[in-house]
Image (tube, rainbow, N blue to C red; front, side):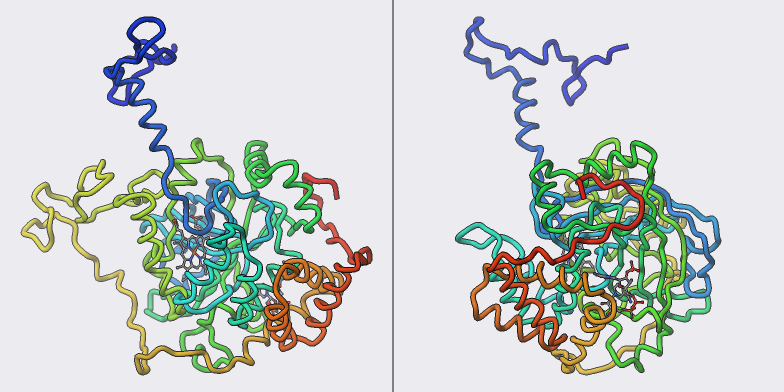
Length: 504
Ligand code: NDP
Ligand code: HEM
């Protein structure tokens, strides 16, 4: 049976197409509150877009524990093989605004919300294991260089490379960004990383440092610049189309959650700082340990409700999982919930995308979006401590074991700059093959081409310290671009059998 259209206060609406007017030609009567409600709602349909990672694509699914890691963590989620929980993911580009084209060269955000029985656990990572900088103090400046120039209102390669040249630790991330993995064909064909070092503690109170990896179960696939440009000419929404259609057609994307694990004391003895976000933990020293499988099998019924309203935060953790001294992580623990209170409103965690599946008992009181009852166990218990036995009380059994820290409070600069070139060198010289290096040279030369000579030279000096052939290769690619002799630069070899939407 057809439903009766109502106002938002529930009153039946006689017409949804005609304004109330004085006579057939108007004017419109001010008393037409139904018209006013309709227009006023439209005026309020936008909220601030995310200050970064504004363009995104989401899906819902299930996480299933496949391996026992209870020797590392007492988290109830990992207490036994076979445990499942619902998940919500959002993948994103970093720099573009809400209307940006999907297939742009950029780092991809990779966020997962696990709705566990102990509350929400969020991993808010990227499709790269590392980042451009290692101190949160630099993040707003870094993002300035990725966004629009105040006068031209255009993106500025000059600003990007100027900043990166002044922060040589960025060369690791810039190398990945300019490599084959800089334009994934869609979110279903890339790995995800928690990137930061986190921690886990087990039932005996022992702490391990941990990195999270989401290993893609679909083939890794990426576009060249040319393929992406051709695609963007046809559609700016390729990721949304691919992801939505795949799930709609029952082709459910999967990732395997893995961890790398380091005993707490080992952090003191390594030849690199394991809390530095510009560094990976090499696989041969810290092998991947499988944990469970993520499968995304539902498209949200309403994109706005579940993807735009999703609020991910590195501060959302559950007992058994902890932070680490990573300076970037520490900054992010503050930044996200603050952004959510501004972007979504005070009680954003009561929205369906963010509402935990676990019972919620807190004493936060009024404010915008207070549309849910206060459940503290007793109607008079709106503060704590109180006289009511049944009212919500803190649970000391979930206390994290103490963490020994030492040192003088100061503002420290990382001293050993040579260390910043070791891992990018391994990536360049040992992981990439010759074709991969050539495409990297060309992509970087293209990206730098609008920059001034002084910025270029400063960046070449950084590349030289990674590997002399890296500098020479990008210089040569810049010359080849100028002379139009780039025919012998190879395309990305196609692997796997997943269909790709553009002609290859
Ligand atoms: P490994 O040879 O064990 O691992 C190399 C890793 O690099 C693999 O995970 C591979 O992904 C990934 N990779 C391949 N091409 C690219 C690319 N263009 N951009 C980003 N990642 C890529 O070596 P190590 O662990 O000793 O690390 C060597 C270097 O590899 C590091 O310095 C770092 O630059 C890079 N790397 C390391 C990771 C880590 O966690 N150890 C993770 C990702 C990159 P795949 O498995 O799909 O082939
Ligand atoms: C989004 C801040 C570093 C991954 C955001 C948002 C802010 C922010 C304010 C918008 C949040 C929202 O409105 O919902 C910061 C700060 C950083 C930092 C201050 C450094 C100190 C990083 C790093 C990563 C990352 C290192 C990945 C390893 C993401 C992702 C999103 C995001 C994936 C989108 C989340 C979503 O899908 O809703 N960041 N960020 N950020 N950030 Fe960061």
